[in-house]
Amino acid sequence: MAGEPTIHRFPAEHEGAFVNAYLVETEAGVVAVDGLLTVSAAKEMRMAVDRLGKPLHAVLVTHSHPDHYAGLAEIVAGYDVPIVAPQGVIDTITADDASKDQIVGPMFGDDWPTRRVFPDTPIRDGESLTFDGVTFTVIDLGPSESPHDSPWVLGDAEKVVFLGDQIYDRRHCFLADGFYTEWLANIEKLRARFPDDAVFHIGHGGPVGHEMWDWQRRYIETFLDAVAAADWSEPESAKATVVARMKAYEPSDELQMLMELSIEPIAAKQGLLAPSA
Image 1 (tube, rainbow, N blue to C red):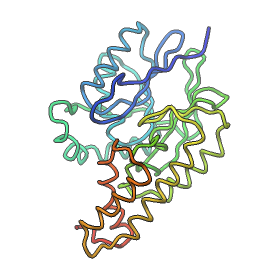
Image 2: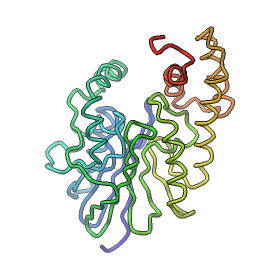
Image 3: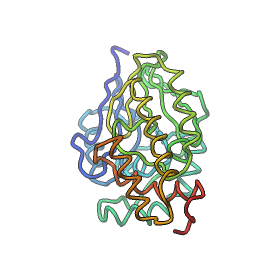
């Protein structure tokens, strides 16, 4: 192709749920990475596809959480394009979407997509797709931040990566799925794989560089330690203690709700709180 691809991040202005998706503009087309959470944000991204005046080639999905796929129907409307992810991501989204609809839908009302489409084209770890000379290679991590994660690497030099939610960029994190052991292991796997000057385009914030691996690891470890150290004889007091500890580590208010939603599930996983509490 004539030049390097151009990366566009959406939405342009963040309100409410702070989540990113991307358009990668090639010489003759566009590839979407993820699909946003709400109808309004997804419509903004679709309007950008139309303004670019180039066909949408495909959608690539980085993991199985609904804020990264719920808006896909708006983005691909009128297009017959593959929505690509490892089979584990496809299976997890298919299995979990009904429960996510019940949980997330009421939070967003009319802005929650009532029609949702899922990834439909499986790809195996290490396989690549090429559009207009631009190559995208998937990494099938399995469970990590979500029940199934699949970052995408742009180009052979591996200096541009669509990392999904493996790094949160100084925003509070979601750990409620409970795969923190795998997440910590994947941090080291990914840290070792990419060059020091790699740029990571992520789901919340960014772009970031290698310096954020340490912050992310410490966030997870601090959270786990805070949950384990809290006095769970009084659960509400224990939750407040965890929140205070995490706010001391990361003062930002952004996505604090995700951290708070994670406290009781992790306490239950650690055997500190009955799962039904």
